[in-house]
Amino acid sequence: MYKATINKKQTLSIKQDKDQFIINDTAYKADIKELSADNYHIITKDGHSYSAELIAFDATQKSAVVSINGNKYTVELKDKFDELLQSLGMDGASSHKINDIKAPMPGLVLKVLVEDGSEVKKDDALVVLEAMKMENIIKSPSDGIVKSVKIKEKETVEKNQVMIAFK
Image (cartoon, rainbow, N blue to C red; front, side, top):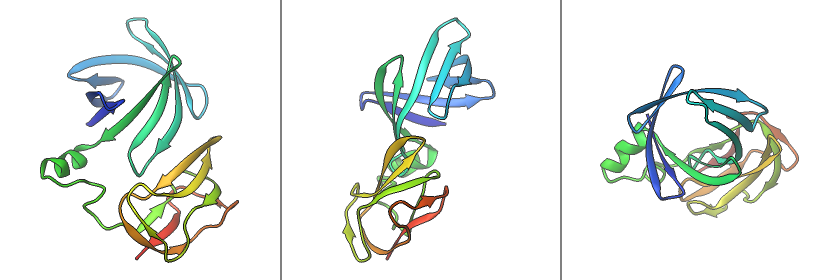
């Protein structure tokens, strides 16, 4: 189950169960057609039609910008572990020491914004990665010091490849 906060205003409880989504305890069935890596067409069982596009995705922050029928939404996701940490009074991103920043998806490194020995703060931009024709800014999930940068600009990376190691 996930908690999705939309535009920092509305929070929904979302769970997928086979061919349906359960949103705030109400089940919805839909046919989802992938048009491309970032574009989807959704038709609900009651006949509503939606065009959905993934505009940006930040895996470290568990957030995305999506467009639904031309309207942009920022969606922040929390899973059950994030919820548990929050209920214990701990922020999931700042409660652990970061060791590595890994590529969230395959792509091309456009810019490396840090170097060995750089001191970074939470949410500092580290790498600009082009994936699926979109620029994705990879940010630091917490404060730390860069031990080594394992990538170079114009280099391709695979999903889960270590890009930056921290002390």
